Length: 451
Image 1 (cartoon, one colour):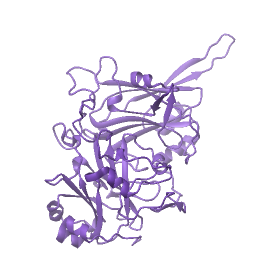
Image 2 (cartoon, helix red, strand yellow):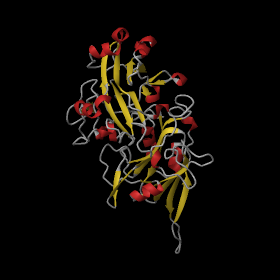
Image 3 (cartoon, helix red, strand yellow):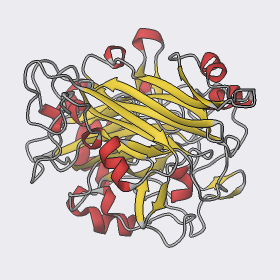
Image 4 (cartoon, rainbow, N blue to C red):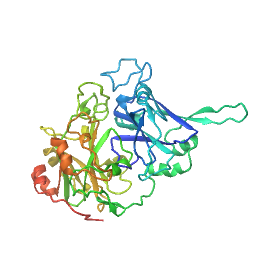
């Protein structure tokens, strides 16, 4: 996982840049459905945003999620059935090309490769460059068990001679090597710089704070207060390679020694306990039929994660090597009390509450970034595929402008009993009085407290 652009620690992303101008014709992606909570393919424009096209009067999006990906002949999609019959294959083919119709998307798993609308928002690549990302959420056994699909570049090759006709060359790309991918696809050298950005190797240069970017207001309609859960503007989220299956809300806080940040709310139902085996291996990492009516779950996936509020917006980490821990928790990792409520407790690593107090409050601890205490952090909540759930983040109405954020009052009204509440208090208060005591005396830090 490249720790850039607000990644979810339980998701793994594989990205390939490609040229969208001719003689490039299309990409063909062939693979096998993995055992995982969710998979998807998303095509992004040169600003790192997904897009929609209007073709023959119908809207065609630049993404396909698992249950939408039709299986190859003789194969079965495990997100379209209750169980896969023995002996049946699970193969698929996805096609990325120009002028995709709604019918072709459904029948051929076709995704448009060119955003025909002008891309004006913070381009990270030349306008003739696109990206395709393959995502998995909670793959059984971890991301190393996922068999990556093959990617074939189809491009026109001119022939010389009076009666020669152009031919189509099919080039299979190697995996996980951006330099070889760029060479095989005959993509410009600029993609080496783009790949560095995508992988987090480029040095960030834009100063950011919770309410400003490069000295300018982050939003055109104001800014939320610390610990207030709101929704970022589409301009802010759209440039971070967003997953269209997800919707997000967030709040920000300033790490302060000796304190904890507590977030409490009602946990939606998800396939967190589906399958058999071990948590995160088979349990919670198994495909479920998403064509069933009614759906047996409110969401496909839920998580809460802490991120540094500075480019390239990495998720918080603690430790190194095999002892590294990410500052996040997914539904299947999160404790829930007898009434269905979760409590997520964040602190600097040295201020972690005792195991006894966490257990007494049915709480789950995630770290703040201990080696950068002067950097503000943002806590995000993800709801995946909540279109049919009344209180999902997906139900929040769009802002009037792409530069406006959605304030907490609107978010709370939409999410109802599932709206989270956050507080910041001394560790000693949480230890002695629990979640309720912390919520009662909350006093959020209003600026950085250390270096």
